[in-house]
Image 1 (cartoon, rainbow, N blue to C red):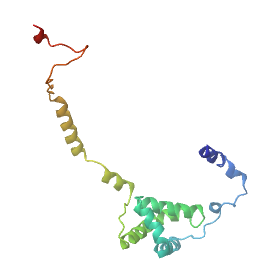
Image 2 (tube, rainbow, N blue to C red):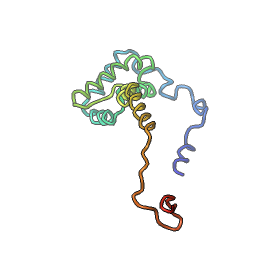
Image 3 (tube, one colour):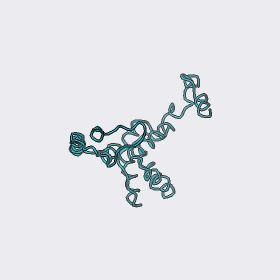
Length: 164
């Protein structure tokens, strides 16, 4: 029931149109207008050793670096720090900074979702080889096991040879 109340407290579609224009951070001019300013901002934040633990925890969980960088720049756009265009231009720099911090601290990382998929997938050749092995096992005739003793009981099937 608690999950249902969460949905009831969500904003109603069109609610953003009921506020005064300019009240939201993304409706105002960004505080950083150049790529250089944004790079300096992210460099200070990512290379700050106080933020390393939180960043490395996320990287160790297996979230790809590209996704982490994308979340960081999207959050900054929502907070009005820079425009979406500047965010896209700064994205490769953010990725490199995160990978540098991970390398310095000896943490393994995944660069993108494609890398995760490649690592967890099987090649077509290997899949075909396994499928052929399974198919061959199904084609082989199974040898029925002969019972060692005659079945007993009221409903047991009697051996025709023994009766004759």
